[in-house]
Image (cartoon, rainbow, N blue to C red; front, side, top):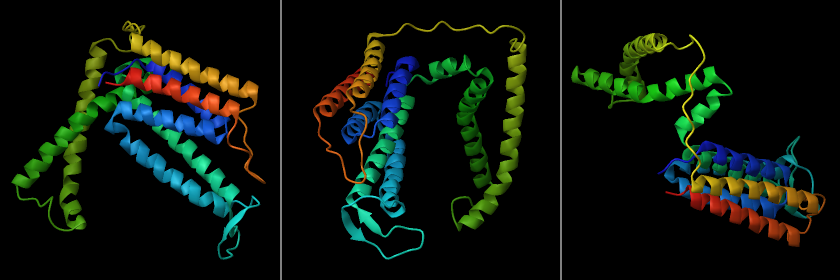
Length: 281
């Protein structure tokens, strides 16, 4: 997969998330969720954990909203009376929980897709301008993870060659045999961190102003993503001016279908679909 410039993707992410939290209109949130899924499809399988996490959290919201709330007129079921909890489940509470869950899925998947699609090195370089020390720490930690995994594999194989049982027996037994390996693993990590610190000092880190790598120019696909971000922002402004952001769940549900909401929702899906096309492989 070709990584994209982070700035257009972050602009798209900011515009989409802002619109998702400003509106309670189900059609607009559904459009944002559909667009987020298109971006996740363009990003590939690495977004599956975010999709699962968002889905599980959304199910929790859908189940808890009717139980914790006490609103709505159309009662669809009654649960046994429990102190401090509402036993009546209304259609309005179910609709509100579903919209909250859909919003959570849309935002979670959108963040995961952008993090996968954006160039990680350029993302860290962008963060260096705002928080240089924090960005450096994240970069060093990310670069050290493969080395740490390789050291752990080597120590595990060495322990197995000496008769340690690390893959058989109970969890407690395997943990007892693996615990002594933590000390040499931490020691090798600390020794490597000292080597990195000495190398940075030898290269003049902290001795003066930092040099900056020239940012590559935006490609045509990056410009398409930037235009899509502007389109989502424009759709949000249009929805605000036309009064299409609001939606009342209580005491009765507002009409879901509306000319402005449908048109703006289609515009959002079209913009995010264009961004997904530009960000694809």
